[in-house]
Length: 132
Image 1 (spheres, rainbow, N blue to C red):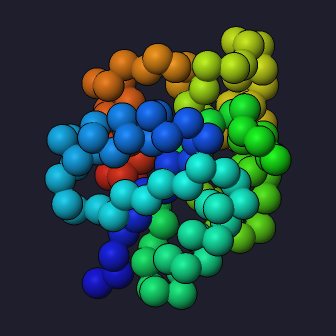
Image 2 (image 1 turned 45 degrees about the horizontal axis):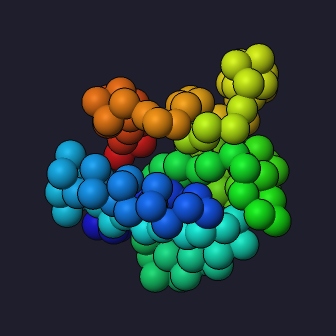
């Protein structure tokens, strides 16, 4: 059976550490949880995971990152990982833009920072139940 991974991309290490703790508490060791501090680093990590036979089942991405915004990152992911579910986790977006992203299917869901742990966990569980 393939190993299953979730990737979080955010330029703030404190956010990645918080997501990692939350993920470990709510999902244990059933999935691999990887982090990247930029879209460029995420693409390198994605290639490594795919080379190791790991199936990436969900990506959580920030919007405002150096080098590449989250929507640009999600757009480029479509070529590499068609159909990938991407959650946008951000504090830097208007409600109008968030709705536009969801309507255009750029992101599966848009969650604002600070996020509610129970809401994020529920959304992740729903996605995982549909992709395994």
